[in-house]
Length: 234
Image (cartoon, rainbow, N blue to C red; front, side, top):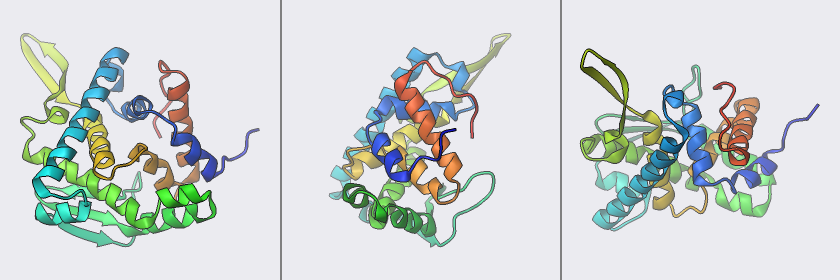
């Protein structure tokens, strides 16, 4: 029986995962996943990533900074820092509450930074507490931007048809596109060489290592076989 995988090994392998693999992983958690054809998903992933990067560049130009904290201040966002994560069916590390509030849990970032201290120095350098904080803050800033311009931003305007009865049609936005866009936004903002989705593994690891390992295996499964569908959501 295969034993637990060390965190350092997981992080090194996940740093090599490409954008499409992370996008398909994100889709696998979406309730609408099976309603969207694989080729359509690939197109949506590419567009959501381009959207996130475009708006990051706009924000940087508008505010003359790529520092997430400075941008949050200029956007007049109210930041609330709490020590413990929000618990429930899943651990919550940050949350944007319209119209202008962002809550960030500091404990998970502290624990994540402590976890990697014994790993390869390159891993330690990539995942310091302040850097993790900026990545998460950038992600939540994107959700604020989405709310301001939801009528024009791709991650909100892209929809799929849920049903069509007697000429009445019901369309739905796709939550996954918002998450992919937010990750691309904060990746561009923080000039990262890897996908911020990797924090799904790192931040979960100290709370639920088995779920973190499952995410790891799902992402690698997507990378090795693009047509693979996950057996179950965690």
